[in-house]
Length: 515
Image (cartoon, rainbow, N blue to C red; front, side, top):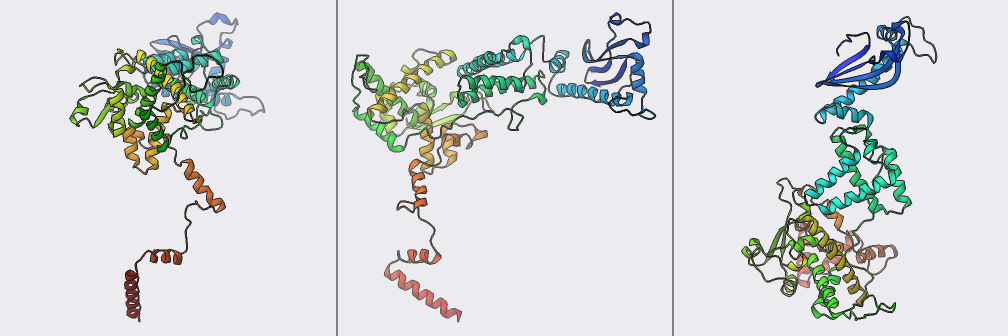
């Protein structure tokens, strides 16, 4: 701690290349008229010097004589009066306040390059160069430049909603706190935005807050998210674990596709009498079967997303393995692994998949796409065009699968989410190893198992019925533990007469040995 060298100063310190002082702001000495120069009062401030200077006023005024008395006070000989702050009390209070600002600068220095603009932003919430809104927008632009157009659009919707309900703009700098976020949440609740969407929005906001803290625009102590009472909890939304089809249901869909036995009546009129499964033309009927085949392919292709199916190629791996398997990198994990190559997925080609490929796919040719009609002439690196096309394809498949479900009397309306969750749940129900399921789904190595379990319904409805039948002792309830004697008799009942005779002889010899 450096000693004050001026009668205008109280405390000083140095953090990195920043010189910090608590002092009187005497730059405008004409602001207070007084014949006694020592009694002129000036604003108390913290001055930060890094080449340029920044004065942060604290809302108090003192004269030079008062500063001298405060710094000379020791607390001894000063009369204590209730409700009246002594010079020594004031000295301790101002010293604590000064230490707080020193600590703030120290945290900024540890988290990045220390600048006057970062200090100003941390203290006032305003910056000449950027704002909370502009940082959020920068993150959106980064996502888009990395080919993550879907995520970028989601973040943009979140930012638009945030600005709409809070009224915050770039001119408000970084003036964001719990009150701001709560105002946003109140607006979302008022407009009946569901918890799942709220969770998506708030997680995008959290990314922006973390970036602002990392860059020194906001202080860690101002972080507003968490599970504590005073923090803002992000809703997780409804679980999608129940969104799966059983093996029998998937086999039924496959049979309908192969036999082409769906009714799908052609009904050109817009009459209310049209059935939910009706189509307008024969061509639309063919598109329903095509969408059903693509849905089944997503399921059989390790629950892959439609974008991965659209980019699937007959690559060297396919031919090197005698056309028995595909290998691809999940588009969603591109550039997210330690080596920047993304997560690899290997898909064994089982017979139903081969039948679908032979019917719907292109002829095998090195480097060509398996289902070229999904993207047409769109280049693999045109992320925005791909996103728009896949979004439309997913929508089309969902609408056509709803017609399939209506035609066969199902109330469920399968989507791509069902394909992925069904893959995970059905393998898990078959007691396959969790590492295999995670590997097949291309989940990140650092979260293997944890992420996979989000897709798995641990118990089917039939299993839950069977287990809860125990409550009423119904016939199909699982076997309850029996006594040791009952278990022994049950085991002996499985022995042949010869085995039982041998067992009795051995038991008799054992008893004789004990005598």
